Picture 1 (cartoon, helix red, strand yellow):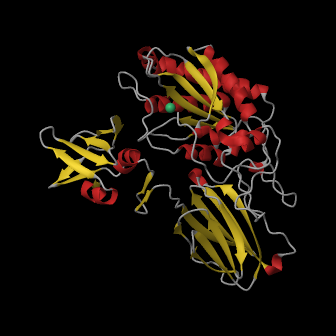
Picture 2: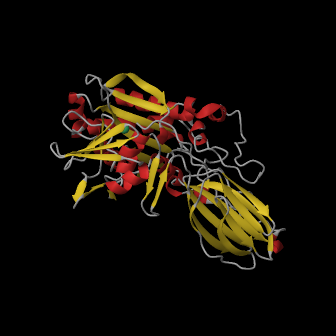
Picture 3: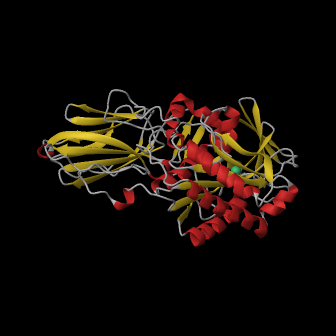
Length: 472
Ligand SMILES: [Zn+2]
């Protein structure tokens, strides 16, 4: 927790304690935040937000949960506030300080430096004298770098000026190359191979291809798990929300995150039993998982389909019925639309100049699968219609963030309106959940039978994630 007095100094807040009502009124830039002891709900400019814990008093000081910064203070100040608990950083405003975690591995004549960058951040690699400089478009780096592993080739790795990582080269240095790949949990990954002189004539092995990459170079025998799949072998089922993100809430308090997890677990069991496919859940319990992380999990596991489960909310409590969404590209610019139409094979290059670097925008990933996602959405809608009530707008396109980075056909299913009292009851009932599960299994079968073999794109997605998109 943070002491309110400390925050008051940092952010120029005034704090007024109302002894009679027992409340705390905090004024930040003319906006009022009202906290009530014993309550984890706070009012921010009249809007209610929830905190993980109520404010606590210790002697004369008040303490608020760390998330108070991002949930209450940030909206009233109108700035972004990011709290990084492990590195003890509080980022205020639009500063970019990516976390960079490095490893070095020596493979024959190559020293391979792998940098995991979260969030993915545009960067450029350049040779400057006897060093390689990876410059990030950021205000700073939160870097953990390894000791050098091969002094003849690579003498040291350290941070340099202006958000850069510097690789000091040894006397055997001959050439280098870089590739960008999706990292784990939504991060970007830069693989930098520092190649010794003697190896120039024999091409070194290529970095591990990113998920979805069609085939390894002809000089190497194809790896079995990189051969394009025919049919559907792996499905990622995304239980919407979770942990701190409760999602929508029904009139008697049913939470969307609980419904989605329950259906996801049933769906996993049914898909595995009936289709013999591998099913991975984006969360197995009531945990908080980022939207990009969910797509990254699917990408890293080379999933063939991505199904995201949600329950809808409406201010009209009469709103009823399931809706199926696939990604709308409108929010994602011309480039994404050209990729979707297959008009461009070469993908945008970031950082300019360095042609070795080719980062594919995170939002390009789904663009290549829009047609297949539309077909999947149709199959899902058709199968749901046979078993559960449908909304008048049963298939829609929307810029849902969770779908953007998915490098495979992906749909988002709003199973019903949790804000409708009847549907709230249904959504938490075993019978309704089973109907949804049956429908989704049927739709996967129908989709699979209509699609002889999934198209595999020329390159997988990686690279910077642009803020944006809608969270369902
Ligand atoms: Zn949702």
